[in-house]
Amino acid sequence: MSEKSRFVIAGDEVQQMLASARVRLVDGSWYLPAQNRDAKAEFMAARIPGAVRFDIDEISDRSSALPHMLPTPENFGAAMGALGISEDDDIIVYDGPGMFSAARVWWNLRVMGAKSVRILEGGFDRWQMDGRPVETGAPKSPEPALFKAVLDADRVRGIADMRANLKSGNAQVLDARPFARFCGTAPEPRPGLRSGHIPGSQPVPATELFSDGKLKPLDELREVFNGVALAMDRPAITTCGSGVTAAVISLALESIGHTDHSLYDGSWAEWGQAEDAPVAQWLDGEVSGKTTVRE
Image (cartoon, rainbow, N blue to C red):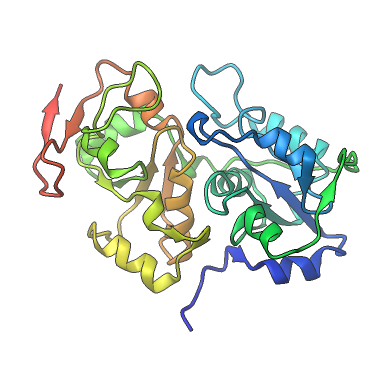
């Protein structure tokens, strides 16, 4: 049997843990407009018993024009405390389809100091299909807790870091967006953004890292990263459209033992609108290594 990530957990195991006082279940669902799903409405209608809702737009730097950027440790800690979550809890995160925004919540919690965070395989959609317990009606208010948030700044990158990396080439940059958007042959879903990718970055579409809402086994993850010649002894930076699916790459990297990685929080939402940031394109749509760079 193929070995799976230690950061994911199966539904039957979660069901057995529902009565544990130390387990905190977190619905981290978030959807793109094109997905036509309302994460808040779905949570209010039904959830895993005892779950609380982590809204990546609400628990963010609300002063930033960029979407769901990390808040300060103080604000993050206060938000987690209000949800009844401590950094010492055994935290299990899920979303609707299984491996989308849950990875970003996993990353947020870990980068702020949570010690044990795992993701439910298959998400809430699979949980319901399997006939597991579901709580309906208005959710109960959680008992307040203390979350001592400490930001691991080495895990977060900004646009200045990305510009510096263009010159140094120190870190491998891995882009989780769909391949056509990476190439520049498909438009960005957010208006006003250029098409293409950060020069020197490599495409690792998040959808190649999971199947049926579950992170792929470790051997299959290694095959995906081998396809972009990932060097295990060099740092990596993950990026995507707005910092959500970049966390799927972060999860996969951590799972295979590549621990020297960080996430570009602003991602293409920031780089794509910065007029002085260079953009590369693979207009032939092939991974040829040849780029057309527009300065």
